[in-house]
Amino acid sequence: MRAENSATRTSAIAVVADPTVTPHPTSAASSPAGSSTASPVGSSAASSAAPSAGRSGTVLAGLGVVAFSLTFPATAWGLESFGPWSLVALRSVLAALVAGGVLLAARVPLPARRHWAGLAVVGGGVVVGFPLLTTLALQTSTTSHAAVVVGLLPLTTALLGSLRTGERPSRAFWIAALAGAAVVIAFTVQQSGGALTTGDLYLFGALLVCAAGYTEGGRLARVMPGWQVIGWALVLCLPLAVAGSLIALPLEPVHLNAHGVLGLVWVAAGSTFLGLYVWYRGMAAIGVARASQLQLAQPLLTLVWSFLLLGEELSAAAPVAAVAVLVCIAATQRAGRHAGREAVTVRSGRESRPVRS
Image 1 (spheres, rainbow, N blue to C red):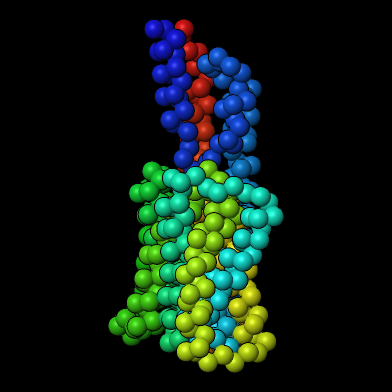
Image 2 (tube, rainbow, N blue to C red):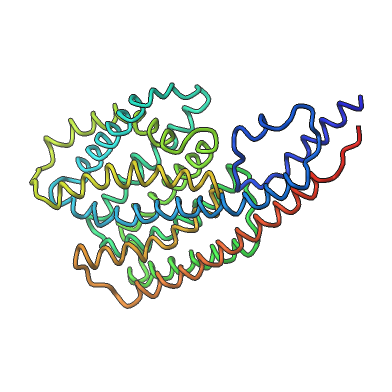
């Protein structure tokens, strides 16, 4: 009976682990059998390892944001050669071929059956839904306008992530996230003259499906490598992408040029595969909510790319809105780091208590 009580107490300690930091899968197995307490040295190592993992996760998620920031300008280039339906179908086919080749070369086994539903959500959100809706929106909206509207994605992802994964960000985090969202909404209303356009409706729909895909992908990345999450999601969508290409290409005119080809290659290999690979790895390390707020920087980066690559004129409100959300990023990351340190302190303190046998 005493042994049973010790096991119960040990499991209770494990429950308080910070949900935004993913433990290494071998950490439990590597502990000595039968040990029920953590040494001070072990607690100190865990405390020092957490900030390191947080920094690397932030860097990875940040690289994903940089890759995503080029998506809208690359899509605008792609639309010079392809119709919207053809472009989305072809980017999915090319990305799936790259992902499938990597999975085959690495001899990765099929995911467990319980993960396929989550992979379908990832595929429907980030492989099909978001690319299609944003491409349709860019037919009537400028890339700079679309980029700042998509600045609502961090808040949407944080909300869904909190509901789906059980993460509980601090009050300061939510205040900063809501402030960033308010800036984006104000910009959208100001740009559209107080009325929503068809392009805005497409963009708001894209926010919902992409946030669902990000959340589910971040959850799955805790049990399998991030590149496998997006890889299997792409492979799952391959039959639909091939069918879409066969239908759309004969119906939409194709006028190949350098911009169109480069845009297609980037949205397929850069945004869809490589970008999501590092993004999901970052999410698994620092949590869905905290990683999502790094995307508040995406509008500012996209504005820069749109100016440099497309020659778009920027309204005075666009850079002001983008800079304002950068302030919100700093606040959310500081709140996330503070919450992470508190969780490590509480966890270490509880683990260091002797457990009576």
